[in-house]
Amino acid sequence: CVAPLSDPGMVRIICGHHNWIAVAYAQFVVCYRVKESTGWQQVFTSPRLDWVIDRVALNAKVMGGSLGDNDKMVAVASATDIILWAICPDGNGNEIGVFSLNVPVEALFFVGNQLIATSHTGKVGVWNAVTKHWQ
Image (cartoon, rainbow, N blue to C red; front, side, top):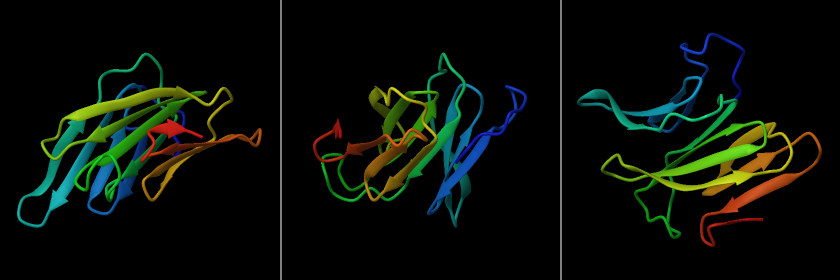
């Protein structure tokens, strides 16, 4: 998902996956899930970041791997930097890491449990959920 230019206090990006949405403001992201019995519930709020969020990726169906079957993942990017969190069933977010693609991130998305970051320069970064490393 890509952010339009807007007021820093306004919602910049809304990105959904299965019964989850990630709502990005200028410097933090909030994740919600919907349950038929109770409606929308706030599950995770990131810490306030030092930079403005330009891209968001959400994966609400992480299966297997080193994160376990119940974890969800959300990532945000600005310029060349990416932060990735695992969201645990209790709603706590564990920062997996802060990464630099070393070129501007033009797209950020998940394919299965792999986070993909691409740039118009042709560079592609893949975060592997099993090895917990960028390739």
